[in-house]
Image (cartoon, rainbow, N blue to C red):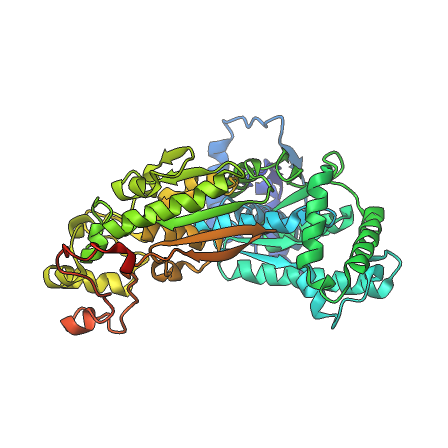
Length: 553
């Protein structure tokens, strides 16, 4: 029996009949009839009817000439178990290749591994990237190798743990890296999209092992991001942030911390091997000076391309952002939602107070104002002496058929819609209107631009500002619709590393409260009293005498 094998990844193996199969089968059948005790494989023993069929097919095939492709390779082997074993090995190899190809697909989970020396901005990139991906629907989590190391050490001692010749310290760091990767793998196996391994990964051997583990064993996609910083000003700022906010240096004096960090960097620099595209077969992005220059090598895939685009527009400068709702509007006083109402007299007073506060800042350094296209935000920002931009994406949530209604009117006219909204406020979409998810989608370009801005004042609306603040503060998505963003309050965000410090500046101007908590009873069969229990108080009509004496309000 002979086997013609086609050695190609894209062709299947075909069995062809060789010229002497008839004589071989007759010989085998004759041997069996004589009582030969040799073991003959079941595949070799054919019935008379089978021989007849083979004989018939053979006669028909004699008038054809088989032409072998130049790329084919003929392998002749004896019939029996050996042939079948070799065939099974070939099929298993082909199956493994196809399985690997199927695993490493566009839809496979992605592991992002940071590479670089300390104080090069790795953690900042990791957490900003995680925030961006989570906002865009890719469930992402950062696994910080330093946090795992601290679990093995009750208290950070000194830089000695990072010496290459410190065997105990090296063992602890290797174990910490393994635990971080294992947890990242479990995160991806649970159905999540992206895991970010925030470690140094400074040697080629470490990167090779991690790359092979992810691709060959786990079937995950992997992307390395190397952070390089040659800008001394940026490097000094990163070092200062580490000294101020790292848990390793909380119990040290400033001089001790500076000396320890300097020696720690020296230890890492002796071991550091930069990624070399000529010798390392990995997919990587090199980020120099926090996005000043970005180089990509073998980057493929939808997720990876999106990450590359985000990193290319990222800058690592410190920033301060200001968020405020428009001044109290006439619809706020009446408890109505949406619309394009003008400011109330108290709202106009807030616009004046906001301008005084921001103009004082603008006298020190430039300020830019972003508003929506609606009347009340433009009126609120009118007196601020700074460049202004009206952005459609900052418009308030469109309430559709419920625009201009009070909550009481919504319960009366659309009780089922009102209940559905309370059940899932994040995803509920008003008929002919929007949901919070829709706002998040249209805010994506605004947030990407805002991440690299400084001294921007955003004058917006309640639902929009909830989403924007939730993005920068890493709030859970289900918490966004219930964040309290009060009127006549400036929310100041100041960056430190990858986090933001929040400061609430309340101006002393009275206003109504528009914050409504989620009621306990969200059933569509609830009573009107249960539906309206958390509705904030408001006026039924605009009182003519409420603001006559504004100084005493």
